[in-house]
Image (cartoon, rainbow, N blue to C red; front, side, top):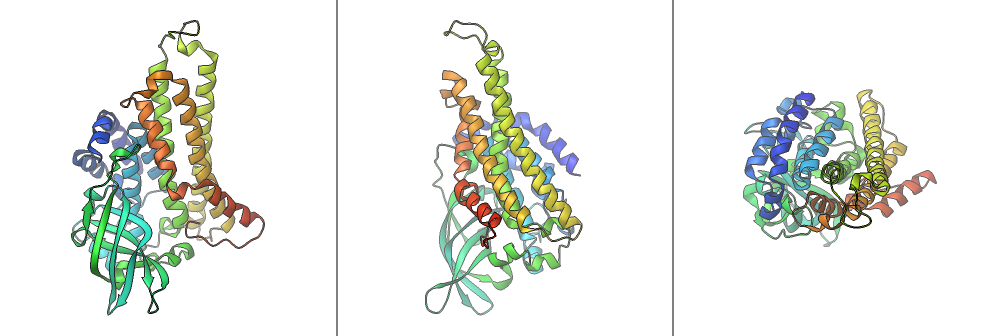
Length: 388
């Protein structure tokens, strides 16, 4: 089934690319595109089989994300983050999963994980309020996953929880107007003191311990992978995909171009252009190979019922953030050597450059802090982080 989804996604790429500029201008992915991706099965790839999902190998999911991102960075970003949410819902209690997929397998979810909301315990659950930013694709979602701190009796935070909230219980505020990833519709969402039953909450502590209640329901290896690997790779995959797609556009645009200065001649005959293509393509390839290797090793360990070692979890994060860093190095090479043509707002090279840089500032792509965590592990220092 994963191969069928990839084939369907490839068939959609020309139309996704043709809408890329309109997606930027609209500041959100169109309903038409979301409907096509839904029909292709993109958003069910990481969803449990018992709820109509494909429960696919995560490598197939990330490959699909990179393909879509190569055609349109914003569409790839939305496909990735909305596509990973069914995986996280599978970690919630069964009652929550039953609610989300009660109307069918194609329910869509958005998120904002920063713990800016406040939860106060009450009978049977919590009261939730807050305002969250950067909720990509929220206009298309029926449910949202929102990060919040549980406030104790003394007014201090005592826990970090993700709450599952139906679209009808919140307001979307249209604020998204950015330089890059313009078409992701990553607007603000506001919740004004609603009740969240206990079963619609998941402690972040359970993420890192791989002990969520949903793992008792969904026993497949996909749901024994750490959140810190699955989600962060979800954030870097579209960045790499956008750059890989830009490389294809770059070669197509520049192959027959004639230089108007520097002695003239074909751009493709310039050894510096040849070196630029070689460097950029190697940076992208190396990043994809490392990231795929790590996810494959994790998935193999989970499939065999083995514990995923901390060394592998740290290496996965190391290579994931460096993958984002290398992607920026590659896109900067292409942007610079393309000359004045890359300055046009509608240029595929310009759009990929803006999208890659925008995606790189996500907290999951924080290079220095993540590398420090890897270094701690190497030196035998205890590492405690929700994204490992």
